[in-house]
Length: 114
Length: 112
Image 1 (cartoon, helix red, strand yellow):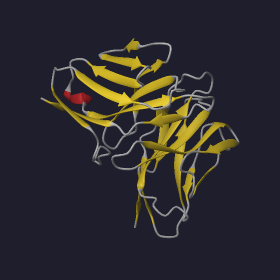
Image 2 (cartoon, helix red, strand yellow):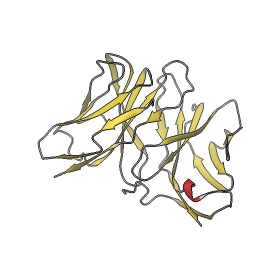
Image 3 (cartoon, helix red, strand yellow):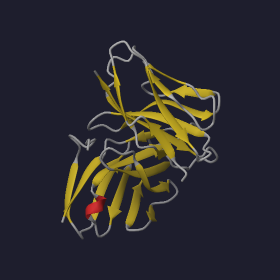
Image 4 (tube, chains in turn orange, purple):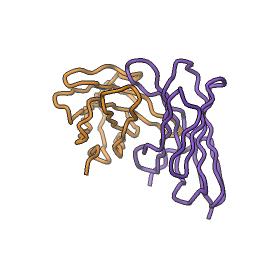
């Protein structure tokens, strides 16, 4: 089945540690996105990429990094500089052509601090 | 499972009733709008979208209404079922970078 796969579903980080969240899509979508969701909040954009080897900061990029070496993969690294990393992280993708296309989401990774 | 619906506006309806979920947006340049459904512990699921050159669009059991004059969007769910219980988000987009801005969501609870 086509879709977006995020792994792991649950992740724990120790103080001072970097962790990487995986996002893979087999929809042949050009654009990919990372969002953070906190309880009672909407989704906030961390980073996005509209094409391979290119990405832009979203609204809350500090303490995060990404790469887009392959069309189907957009991993997110939560660095030790992110002081409040506990959240639900969502990856999305979108067909690149045309303005009016919805984003489609994976089922998220929940990150907690040990 | 985990809840992402804490401290959200809530709507409680009886099974079989119609539900109306509202969303206000602030960016007058927004020209594309989407409704998503998010169940506990899962990612948002696309429900329906509408472009700014339309004021109404219908899907299966759902209707989205757009009032650009007052910057208001609504989602109507007909004959609401227990499986419709979830958090519903509106999202808006405008400009060339295709970024979406999400509302905070509404928790819909359907009572059997």
